Length: 313
Ligand code: BDR
Ligand code: CA
Image (cartoon, rainbow, N blue to C red; front, side):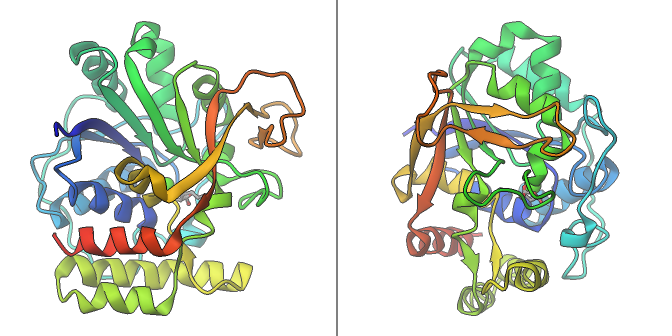
């Protein structure tokens, strides 16, 4: 089987880090052409650095990392240090990366790659605000029809918001960018909070990461340990949701997930509900479906996949 070509657009973030590791642990299925960093959980200077830290941890210094947009299209940047800590990857002690950052801008890399590769063979996997992706589509509309699929983490319907009562963080930070992506006509798979809140890193899972006895296992345990504290306090849940790894798990084993092909629109106007994903789950409008909106996951199957793959690194 030829591995599927993907670009991971990310704002690491502990859960982004686990998503990157899961992708790197699956080279037979996924060929990571590049990692593009965007401002989100923490500012760009940290997300691009964190992306390189994770590549090095996975032994993948060969994967090019690019820095992209340092602020959303229209609004000022909102960050999430209250969840991820000051560095974005708080938890374990981390050394600075030695692999270089690419000189090329992430948006140029996305455009160039989609023009170079055969149409319909590159999938985009956004794990943060959609600024880089929307900037690429705006600057080079010819690349839109070349994208095979977009598999993203963002939005919420039944769970509503985590950063405001109405909005999920990634969409809230750059709703104008999200609107461009959701209206692009590209096949979309959306992993919203409705599904990511069902994959919780409970204590036995963290113990399982530690029991791997590898540097990757120790790091993932320390990251999820840190990341957990926020959701435990906020939701009273048993552990932290592994939001972003849901996208990679979907690419590896889509049958772990179920959802509905529905219409999803982004609220950009209202101060009160800015960034809300208005998901027509019940089909009450005649708006055309534009996304597979995931709603359920086999959590045990997800953790089985995650732990077996991470143990390979
Ligand atoms: C999303 O926001 C970030 O904090 C996480 O990395 C994830 O991508 C969850 O709302
Ligand atoms: Ca993220």
